[in-house]
Length: 95
Image (cartoon, rainbow, N blue to C red; front, side):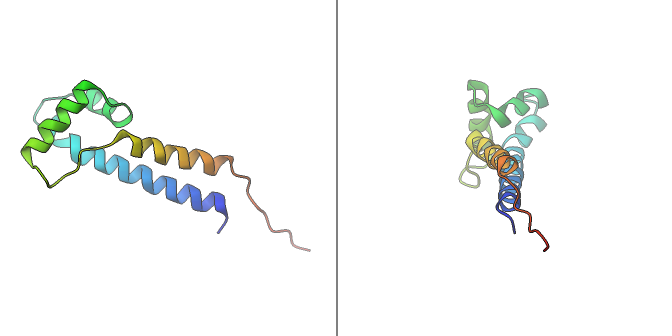
Protein backbone atom coordinates (compact mmCIF):
# COMPACT_ATOMS: atom_id res chain seq x y z
CA UNK A 1 0.00 0.00 0.00
CA UNK A 2 1.37 3.41 -0.92
CA UNK A 3 2.39 5.75 1.89
CA UNK A 4 -0.17 8.36 0.84
CA UNK A 5 -3.03 5.84 1.00
CA UNK A 6 -1.86 4.62 4.39
CA UNK A 7 -1.67 8.18 5.71
CA UNK A 8 -5.09 8.99 4.25
CA UNK A 9 -6.64 5.96 5.95
CA UNK A 10 -4.95 6.76 9.27
CA UNK A 11 -5.97 10.42 9.09
CA UNK A 12 -9.55 9.53 8.22
CA UNK A 13 -9.67 7.11 11.16
CA UNK A 14 -8.34 9.77 13.54
CA UNK A 15 -10.88 12.30 12.21
CA UNK A 16 -13.74 9.80 12.60
CA UNK A 17 -12.60 9.00 16.13
CA UNK A 18 -12.38 12.72 16.96
CA UNK A 19 -15.90 13.36 15.68
CA UNK A 20 -17.24 10.36 17.60
CA UNK A 21 -15.45 11.49 20.75
CA UNK A 22 -16.79 15.04 20.28
CA UNK A 23 -20.31 13.65 19.83
CA UNK A 24 -20.00 11.57 23.00
CA UNK A 25 -18.80 14.59 24.96
CA UNK A 26 -21.17 17.24 23.60
CA UNK A 27 -24.24 15.29 22.47
CA UNK A 28 -25.86 15.22 25.92
CA UNK A 29 -24.99 18.86 26.56
CA UNK A 30 -26.85 19.84 23.39
CA UNK A 31 -29.73 17.46 24.16
CA UNK A 32 -30.25 19.11 27.55
CA UNK A 33 -30.23 22.55 25.94
CA UNK A 34 -27.05 23.86 27.56
CA UNK A 35 -25.49 24.58 24.15
CA UNK A 36 -26.83 24.94 20.62
CA UNK A 37 -25.50 22.74 17.81
CA UNK A 38 -23.62 25.77 16.45
CA UNK A 39 -21.87 26.41 19.77
CA UNK A 40 -21.08 22.72 20.21
CA UNK A 41 -19.82 22.55 16.62
CA UNK A 42 -17.30 25.27 17.37
CA UNK A 43 -16.00 23.08 20.20
CA UNK A 44 -15.03 20.46 17.60
CA UNK A 45 -12.25 22.68 16.27
CA UNK A 46 -11.61 25.31 18.96
CA UNK A 47 -11.53 25.12 22.73
CA UNK A 48 -13.11 28.08 24.53
CA UNK A 49 -14.49 28.87 27.96
CA UNK A 50 -17.98 27.73 26.94
CA UNK A 51 -16.54 24.44 25.68
CA UNK A 52 -14.70 23.93 28.95
CA UNK A 53 -17.93 24.58 30.87
CA UNK A 54 -19.85 22.16 28.64
CA UNK A 55 -17.20 19.47 29.18
CA UNK A 56 -17.44 20.01 32.94
CA UNK A 57 -21.23 19.59 32.75
CA UNK A 58 -20.83 16.44 30.69
CA UNK A 59 -18.25 14.93 33.02
CA UNK A 60 -20.46 15.87 35.97
CA UNK A 61 -23.26 13.68 34.64
CA UNK A 62 -21.09 10.60 34.11
CA UNK A 63 -17.71 11.00 35.83
CA UNK A 64 -14.85 8.60 35.12
CA UNK A 65 -16.78 7.05 32.23
CA UNK A 66 -15.42 9.59 29.77
CA UNK A 67 -12.29 11.59 29.09
CA UNK A 68 -13.32 15.05 27.86
CA UNK A 69 -12.81 15.75 24.16
CA UNK A 70 -9.48 17.28 23.02
CA UNK A 71 -9.56 19.51 19.94
CA UNK A 72 -5.94 18.53 19.23
CA UNK A 73 -7.13 15.10 18.07
CA UNK A 74 -9.27 16.67 15.33
CA UNK A 75 -6.36 18.83 14.15
CA UNK A 76 -3.97 15.87 14.25
CA UNK A 77 -6.31 13.87 11.99
CA UNK A 78 -6.73 16.79 9.62
CA UNK A 79 -2.96 17.25 9.51
CA UNK A 80 -2.41 13.58 8.64
CA UNK A 81 -5.02 13.76 5.87
CA UNK A 82 -3.36 16.92 4.52
CA UNK A 83 0.08 15.30 4.53
CA UNK A 84 -1.36 12.30 2.69
CA UNK A 85 -2.67 14.59 -0.04
CA UNK A 86 0.73 16.28 -0.37
CA UNK A 87 2.71 13.02 -0.44
CA UNK A 88 3.58 12.05 -4.01
CA UNK A 89 1.96 8.90 -5.27
CA UNK A 90 4.31 6.15 -6.43
CA UNK A 91 3.06 4.55 -9.62
CA UNK A 92 4.49 1.28 -10.81
CA UNK A 93 5.44 1.41 -14.46
CA UNK A 94 4.75 -1.63 -16.60
CA UNK A 95 7.66 -2.36 -18.91
